[in-house]
Length: 191
Length: 170
View 1 (spheres, rainbow over the protein chains, first blue to last red):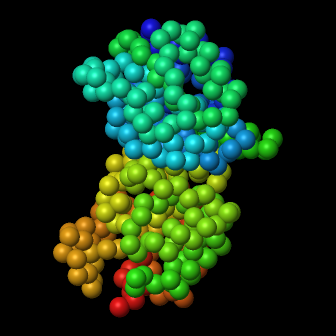
View 2 (cartoon, rainbow over the protein chains, first blue to last red):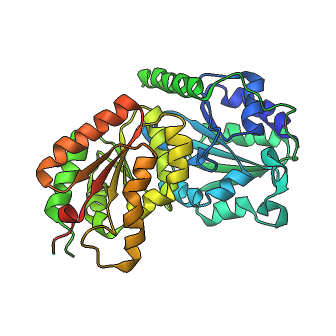
View 3 (cartoon, each protein chain N blue to C red):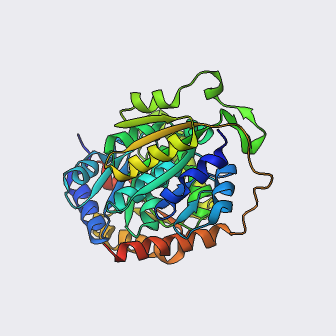
């Protein structure tokens, strides 16, 4: 599966949710599908998108939070799975695109290329719901199900190590940051 | 255990006066009472992290969601979190209220703490992070509140160094 097809499939499910993505190809592809003020692209601090998502989910329990992670990022912060599992916010959906590659920085293989099983790690860390998706349709169903349910879910989706031609996004980091904060503020006003 | 319970209570009250609702922490001896108080407080969510890096992400998320948070960490935890402090908090202008137990400084008997103690302040200054020392419990309320005020006004991390004089009863 191509990540861009997977993102396109889940876009209708996530477009009105609070979304935090990792840097690089994921951010550029989601941005290109259609930026929303409720999307935050963590363009650095690799590994911390899930920690940010956890902070938002705990702070805004009435709202759904979707984290779009990657294998390289998650491997840099595996402890996040144990911390998320410990608090298990039911409003958090953690999608991991696993292309077995550090695609955005030269395409070097990650440890998932040599057998590390991130879904297995998530299960062993006691994430209450862990699923794997192999097609865009499966992923769409898994994301819709996780958003409709109230259980912390990690969804691992294997994708090809293919990214966009350009990683350019016409959105300065700080503009994204302040716009996102205002979008969350507006959501909180309906609480 | 000669960690000061009375002064931990003073610090905790100061955090409450700052309307802190999320506290992230990684257990460390000087912080035991503070962590227990956060754990017992129904108004506060305590998030025990596996590594301090996570806490920077958690506090960043909480800030963007409009909730005040604080971080409890040892100075070696601050050292462990330097990359996300730089490439998340400083890069994205995220305020952080970091309460850092200042191990390895004057009076330290544990040799393994001393190297981290000696580099803590130089590194904070190199990063441009404003620093308060907290040695006198009478200063706690004012200094912690002022640190939070500066963090929010400057959209920057600030550090409150919890010293041996405050935390440890010989």
